[in-house]
Image (cartoon, rainbow, N blue to C red; front, side, top):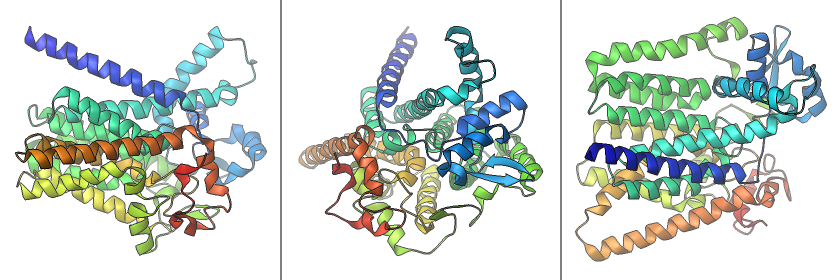
Length: 437
């Protein structure tokens, strides 16, 4: 009976969390479908023609003009420059949406595609859905270490005090799906401590995260090493699961691009105006990703400093587990690669967009910090730390709310000068992006 009541309480927490986060994400008005412009068109092409080219949308691509840099020509066909992982995740939803819309809503014309007229609605829905599901898995990670109410509050902090709100949930960029896959993978590996079979299942979301975004290679490698060391007998099965995800990707790329990976995965593989994937050792990027006034992680989400304090605390208390070392490797590797991009500031975005991908890992270490904070014996220090933490969460939510609800924060990128050509603006303390109204 007690187990049943626990299950009911867990479901209640999940339902309330999902409803609240999804509603806020879905109704927040600021959107930017630049990089995600043709994600749903690729999904629709898979359904209609069994291919991923965008030939049937050539007229639209030319008409929209500015988004021509989001496609490339291979063997006479038009393809999106971006990895197809997000499009593949969207396929079942596009299929259902097409069927529902044609059956129950006024006809859009037999020769017209629903995706041409309803893309914005579906983009908003799926961006909110994928990001909300990632927050649910952060909650599930939390209850592995914390009481449910505290895990619930931690989940809300990450939902509304980070770029999960202002990047992941704003449009079908790869960040929301990446957060979903990494949070699911981490949760499965934590569950594997009690049921080892979950370690094998973790191979799917971790491998699929690489199909979504190339920088996810670091957590994939790190957590694969963890499975090898912690569950050696199960590793062959884990490896088979990973291969079942990655081999179709390689086959597809060789068939389309004649290389194991698409151009997006290679340095200098693509070029979009001021943006390309060339790498440059940059102290500016390393510091700017953390502390610049208009792109810094600790400026836009100051409470995340406690994630890094959590890392230090684990080592000081000698509570670090094997998985902790490998997750730290993932954070450092991710920080290095996004800092070495020539366009490390991330283009026309709000805040530290590139850090969005590893928010589940930062959430994990934040949760471990809170776990240790609960048992601190120094009451005065404990109370002061809690007050500072809560204040930093409130500030973070206030900042992210601005990015999700005020269009002026997005216009900052082009006013007074285009951030992609005058990126020194990210260091301007007198013109803070999150204060624009």
